[in-house]
Amino acid sequence: MTGFRSRATVVAVTPVAPSSWVTDAPGVFDPRPRSLAFRFVNALCGVLGIGADLRTWTPERRAEAAEWIARYKEVRDVIHHGEARLLGTPEEPSCGVQYDAGDRTVVAALSTGRLDGAPLVPGRPARLRLRGLEPAARYRDTASGTSYGGAHLLHYGLPFAWSADHDADLVVLVRE
Image (cartoon, rainbow, N blue to C red; front, side):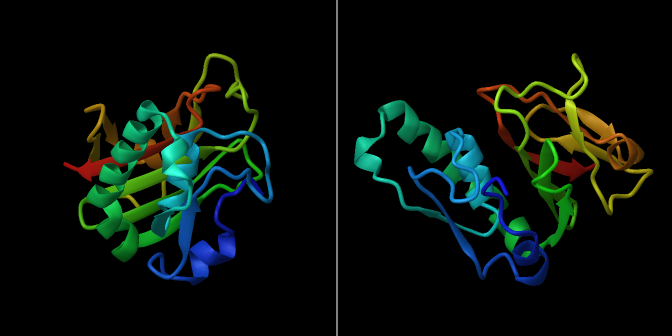
């Protein structure tokens, strides 16, 4: 496992019960170096906690952490009260958790494959096929403004251009 919450925890336990922590320690199951984004996206799939020594962080790292905390506050109602769906497994090159509540869908996505982010097929982004969406509806990514058809997200998937520096993402989709 790559530090991603255990599948049993995501499926069997409400997201408000477990807490995950962003720390400076390497992962227990996967000690490979991971970005701060990876650690935050992994930890926010529940009750986000921070167990790192913030005094040792650079101002840039603290600013990035503040942005992740703000993003978590914007979506925690969906994570805590929405329906959770697993997307793939940590053994696959990309995996995630999809949370749905009302017209909002939150996707916590992680690159769990090669650390250089190289896609399986060169030149093509990794994709996570979403579940439970309305095929005829349109969904807009609130960060990029990109609009996707529900059928596209269900059958082709949400694209992620992983790289060595970009190994995790939090996507918020709003049904239009």
